[in-house]
Every structure is written in structure tokens, then in C-alpha cells.
Image (cartoon, rainbow, N blue to C red):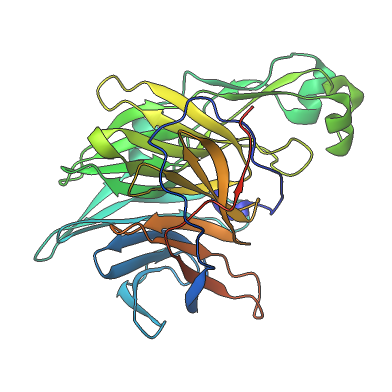
Length: 362
């Protein structure tokens, strides 16, 4: 399974959209991003709750709240692999993951649900994965048993055991968790009961001769279709209860194989999944705008894209962007990764506005 903390930065352009949600919104040009804080390391997710901006920062390992002066006041400390955060009234939910830094193996992961008035319930997604393995019937790997191919890229196999509870959203009565290790979307009740909402299909890619060479693979790999794992990175609930999820393609996302991240719509009643847009370079987060626009953070593309009934387009270029969220008034907030001392992580605000470089949808 793919671990988000091991990602290497790549790059590619936004591609096509298939079925587009929402309605076209007015297009005033966005104002340049305004930096609100440079006191973050890895702001994997944001939650905008009225005047509060909460940050799940996987760098220091805490959930914090942004102050007017740009500092971040810890709300919950000692959260290993902090990645997701969501609220519902006085409820607070956040994810944690313990990872072996040498092997990138996740040894523990789950959702913490803090009740109003005190007390926290822990939903153990690692235990749920071990008991149920929802994608265990999905086959990944090369569609070939040629020894040359399997020696180069490994054999075909079903979904293994892994959990990385990455993002969380409230669905009004409980919580939805995008599990980037288990390749599924989970529902968690306020008392910690877990159930499967949906799994996502394998992401096929036929390797060309040029791509095999660029990846340093033998010529026998050319022409082989490889089914990559889908890696859910974020979940949001839209109007009418529809659920939206972003996925990474579970394999190389640099120029060698191109931008293959996707945006999905999940029916909460039938549990069916429909891909509504693809071609994102590192789709690590999403947010739903005031008028139905869906914003997608493209970590490897260095920008925030917009999906609506007019197509897929660019809201703003923002290197290192890893998270995006919207306020009730339409303001867009985003978090960027810290690269080094001269380029710290940041939280920025982008006033609602026009898409600056619309692309044609093919």
C-alpha cells in the first residue's frame, strides 16, 4: 500500500474531466494568496469552522488552531502522523498513524473522536483492516506472468493489509475516513463503530516502451498493463449528502507516467463510486466551494485546480500545496509543505475569485 509520507515530488499538467459536478460560478479573478502563518511543517489537512482554522500538522504531530498573529496554538498534542481533522459542533475528530520510518510500515492507525464535555473514543482502523480487508478482492500488479515482468515489477496480488487513516469529514451523524493504506472509505460512528462505505477500483496503466526506459525497467515491461492501487487522500460531503474523494494513483507520478490522480463521487446509499475528473498531479486534498466548485490541491503540480460544470481549470499556482479548505463565505484556505528553513510550511488565504487559466476539457 502507498504511504503518503514517502512521496517524492514530481510534476505534470491537469488532464481531462469526465463527468463534472456542481454549477458554474461567477468568475472574478482571485486575489494573490495571503500568508497567514509560516509556523507549520506538514499541514496535511485544514478545517475551517466559523472563525476557527484548525490544522492537522504531521510535522510536530499535533492538531492546532491558527491565531490572528500567525502562531498555531496546540489543541491536541502528541498525535503521531497527524493528518486529518474535522469538527461537528463541539465534536472534534482527528487521525493518527504510527509509522516505522525505516520501512514505511504503518503499525497503528485510527480516528480519535473527542466528545463535547470531554472523553475521547478511538476507532482502530488497523484492527478493522486486519479483520475485514475491504479491498482484499481487488487485484493489483502487472497483467502478466512473464518471469521477466514479475521480476521487474513484482507479481500480481490482491490487496494486502495496511491502514493509514489519513483524512476525516463529518457526515452529519458520524464521520467518514479516507484510508490511504486500506484503499477504502470508512464510516465511523460517534461511539467508534467502523463500517465500509466504498472501495475504489484499481488504476490501470499500460506501460509504453519510452516509459519503461524512463523508469529503468527492462524492455519486457513495455506493453504490459499494470493495475496500480487507488490511494484515498481526502473526503468531503457535498450538497445533498454526496461524498467526494480524491485519490493518488498508487505509483510513480512524475513525468514518466504522467498525472493520474482522480476525483470521485460516492453515493452514500448505493456505495457506488464514479470518477468525475482525473489527470491531477498529486491530488492530496479537496474542498467544496460555496457554489458547488470543487477545489483539488495538486502537490506535485504546485497548484489548486477547480472542477465544475465548465471543466477543470487552475485557481492559483501554489508550490508545495498539500491541503485546501473553504469557509462559508467562499474564501479558500490552503496549507503548503515546509521544504527547508528558507521555505517553511505555510497557511495561506485566497479570496474567492475567477479561475485564472481555464483549460479546454478533452
